[in-house]
Amino acid sequence: STDLTSTVGYDSIIQHLNDGRKNCKEFEDFLKERAIIEEKYGKELINLSKKKPCGQTELKTYLFIYLFFFAEVDNVGQGHIQLAQTLREEAKKMEDFREKQKLHRKKIELIMEAIHKNRNLQYKKTMEVKQTCCCFLPWGALLYLSSLSHFWQLFLKLAQTKSALEDSDRSYQQSVTTLEKIREEWQKEHIKACEFFETQECERINYFRNALWLHVNQLSQDCVQNDEKYEEIRKSLEMCSIEKDIDFYVNLRKTGSLAPAPVVYENYYNAQRNATPVRSPVPAAISR
Image 1 (cartoon, one colour):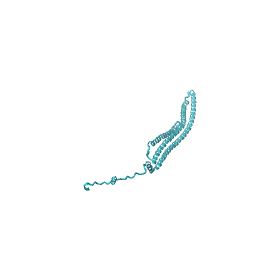
Image 2: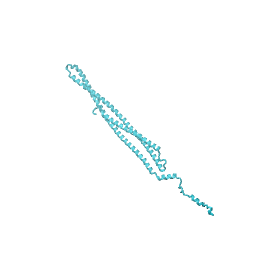
Image 3: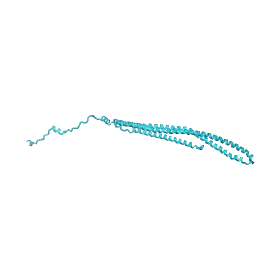
Image 4: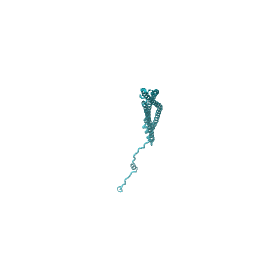
């Protein structure tokens, strides 16, 4: 700004840096909340794998598949818990980075606040001295134009006024000189502050970009690890042998090696008749 006492540009930079710090805090909070979700999800998976076992009555290869499946579900749960811990660590790093920048920036801000205050006070003082000098000029002209009859009486006052004017002018010149030195110092410090703030902003953007990149890589890595676990489950399914499981069950539960003999029909009625012939009784009349 062309106004020497204005801080509009400086205030704009500070506001932008505060917004950047706020963005870092929001991402930090996101990581913490995501960690809570991942940890809760992981614990729920582990509890589910232990609380709801399936396939306990299965045999041989298929029993192994069931046990392997729930072991991998447990591993996936552990992976999410580990991811939660990683996210918390990244959130802590973001917090440390944010606080470090805040502390470094505070030093520069204190310097700038002090130099702004000194500059404004000196500018105010200089303008007051300038105003005083301006007020003496009309009086000097008035005395010069006074009537000759009062000349000797006013001569002494004129001399005093001239001396005061000269003193005020010297004071004004000194104030301007001092103000210019302060202005040059302020401008130098302002440039240094802007360069420092620009460096911090570059660091913040770079750190934030890398943090987001790392976060996405962590999630991608977690998906890769989960897919590897699921691939192990798929491989275990390929090991499943229906024939082996059936043979194993038969051998385990078999009750003998021979089937029951066929049931043969036996005619006990005819067999009895053939063994004991039955004779019909002959009436006495006929026998005679």
